[in-house]
Amino acid sequence: MLHLPELRGRAENFGAEEGKGTPFKVFSGKEATLNRVILLVFLSSKHPLAKYDVYLQIHGMKGLKRKDSKTVYRRIEVLNQEGWIAHRGKRPAKVQGESILYELTLKGKLALRLDEISIEEFLKTASDEQLAKFIDVL
Image (cartoon, rainbow, N blue to C red; front, side):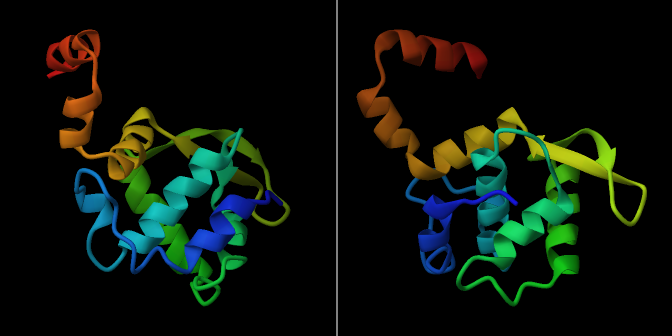
């Protein structure tokens, strides 16, 4: 089981705390807290994770212990369908045969980063080279 001590202290505050940066639909609404925590679990992992691995991490966090495994699994499926995470292989499972492994996509990493920093702050602090690259992407 992976240990995420840096997330454990923050998990109880995720519901009350909104991102300081750019608002994204994935971080709004009823499932915002769970979405943010799931993406942070994937961000902190050095390798792809199965749904059960993510559930174990979330289940150990104060404030999220009552989240049912089915709820976490459904959220992972939705995040996968929306492109925030992606399939990255399979591994043998103890019960079902194979577990699908997931990892955070670039879209998910960027959303987490932009959730921390506002576009206005980026524009104030970015160099001309960074701004030019940003414009080229748009």
